[in-house]
Image (tube, rainbow, N blue to C red; front, side):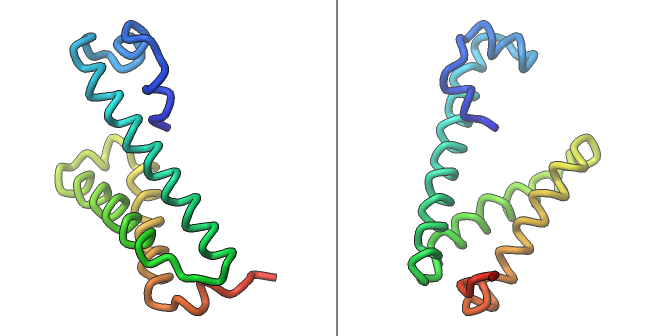
Length: 110
């Protein structure tokens, strides 16, 4: 997760990523983005609990996960991170399925 990048000292970010301390602000921005996504997904679960399909959260997830998967596959980076690439792609596919069948997505599983 990227959230620890918000709180780690710059020296620790540099040591754990292999980049110099000048890259720390970029990793802190990544931490903010991940935290924002977690808040968004949490709100989506709350909406589902209310019986409301979270279209905005689905759009956010499609852009985030679909865009991330597209970048990984387009750049060839998926070869170095196959598990992450397939996981992100699977989440994007699940979101597409949910968008195509919102009534099923809102229905309780039990």
